[in-house]
Length: 229
Image (cartoon, rainbow, N blue to C red; front, side, top):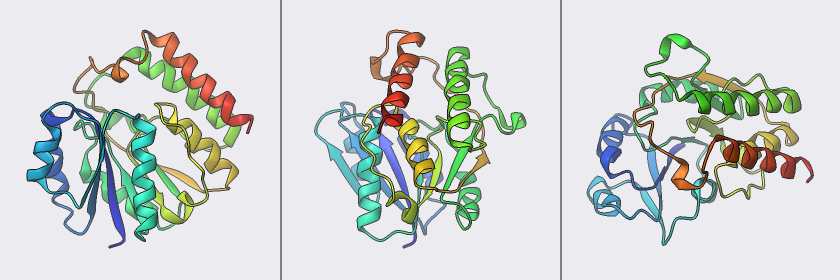
């Protein structure tokens, strides 16, 4: 098997069956689930949905940690590519072929919800757009990557490229570390335009940030810390 879907999950019982139904169209791709300490009925649903692998955290360890564990698995088991997706039904599996096609030439293919405005299905929360713009502009200046959406979790990776990074950021600043380390490892990058979908505006980063400024400050601290390495 050449390709795996790395699917982080935390309390996604409401959307999980729908996401798996769409992913089943790609029968030649393994689904690797990382359940980050879900406290709803996610674990029972996963028994019925039968992904290739479930890596279960006993408690919530963080978004970045779920991806790092997924990456560790696909590296160890000899996959060629992996696709990361969120499990809240805001990423459309129908766009997976775009990632796979571009992974033939690039180390990282990042989904962009802003590359093609015609794909926008829902108005995004204004404060999230603003923070994304601020961080994306800083990363463009530092890395030279022509990215337009630094935080989209819908991404494709060549496993050979992943092996060149030493990722440690367990929280929501994880994408920032990816971009900086990719730049230092001279990885090649492009984007796939994907739909901008916001089904639940109440999602709040697991109550880790009290407001927009606090979240932005966290991202800036991750960026500064990574640049000092």
